Image 1 (cartoon, helix red, strand yellow):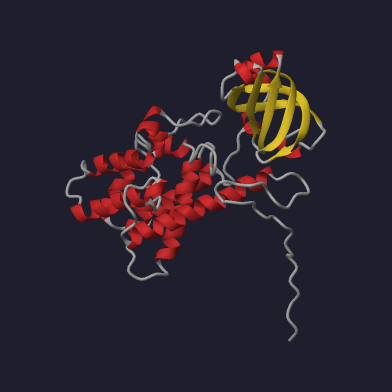
Image 2 (cartoon, rainbow, N blue to C red):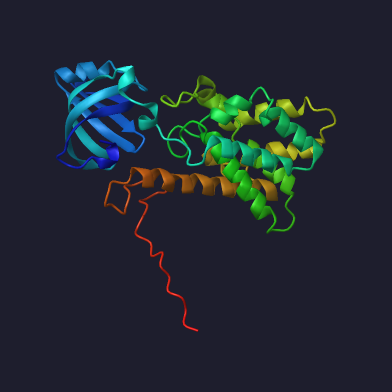
Length: 321
């Protein structure tokens, strides 16, 4: 039984992944965030079981048994009867963590095709040195998650997100005048490259690294791209400034972590498409977690409310002649 299938009053016995642990009431009450690829639950351990639960660590796969007491804002609430580390052979990683909807091979092919369309030579060199097939960084970029929790928080998520943003930026660039399409696509492909240093890569335990906590993904991305640009002979200073400005400003607001606001067409375009991609990614995540028969998700922090997945009428009657 998956988390998506949990209903109030149901007895459950399954394998879930520990995402977080909170010890309460002087160790006599422990609340855990438990999840599989379809959603998250709150697990409550009391009494003697609380001490056992408190010794668990995040990213541990556990056998759990208990009763679904109800459904709260953060998902089903399970009163636990038993919890213990699961045997390695008793579960599949694919059951516990999500993955991209597109095949990795197709995403890689699409990425290579998009990079081929970038004609400005210094931008092509920069892309080849950072995410080209022979780049030292490429295997990490291909496999890394895009986030810890809210969108594309799975292996290959960074590749999927960066490619989606760049493809959309490429398409929109043809619609609005004055946009340097090669610059915008390059910035879109590299805008989140700081996440390679800011997040761990283990799909069962995606978390911020020390560097991610102390410096943040945007400064880390700026430093990596700036350092690479300085190794490319003759890289135009104005072009270098335009590229790193996209990275520094892509969150769009100081309170969201960008040290500067978007001040060019290309940076503005990347910011808004990146923001759109993250929000639509939240719909994908919520739809996968939606219990059978439900059309509204619970409150989502990214969307600021619930998401609606009502039935769609795919049969459109032709107009009368």
